[in-house]
Image: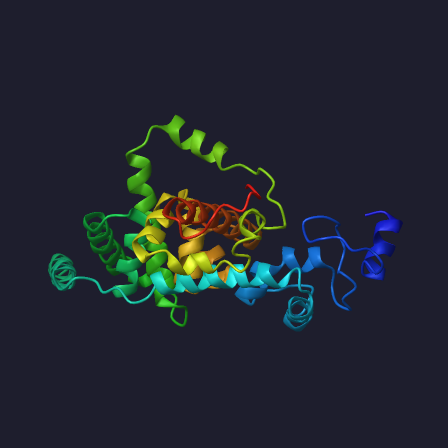
Length: 111
Length: 178
């Protein structure tokens, strides 16, 4: 990163009205981390696995940045569906019996 | 056993194969019980065995060149920070409500179609709630690789679900294109 890029980042993109799909480092004038930083960390944020930036900083960006907020919602909707399909599904009863029999036979073999 | 069965089902995509995987998993767990470290999550240990059994079965059924081709295909094409699905649907459904319209079976079908590395990472994280560190240990890769697999797997899955939603008319094309 050049000094100019670094400086622009420090300014938080103030004075330019780019979009999340456009200017790197833009935070749309929001007093928070730049959009690209927030967007690039959206998975870690939702997974609770952020490093180098706090949950609060990223949460605040999505809360106040109207352009980035829908990105977060889209990822959240996706997670909701994944949780739904991952919900309870039981192993069939005959499988439990088979496993128990298998382990009993193995135990006998082992003496 | 339910969790191991679910995991085996997501990995293999078939109830019959999943049942075989579960039996083999518990048999191996029984035989190597002395290797289980008390205090660690038994579920992680069983999932690790289950995946190893699955991978051995897959590799036995494949020629070496097929495995190599698959790995190359999964390579490291760059992904945009901005989600292409959002770009494509921004005008008609910017918050991704269409995901909620897709029935479970279709979602699971798309999960099964993911390449194995991505499928395992997505299932362990999004369906089973394991941490990056736990997934890294279970799949024997660095945490950075787990993050990358999750990122790519989720993007592929989201794109597939978006295209399905378009086909089914749950969402209208916005002209954004992916």
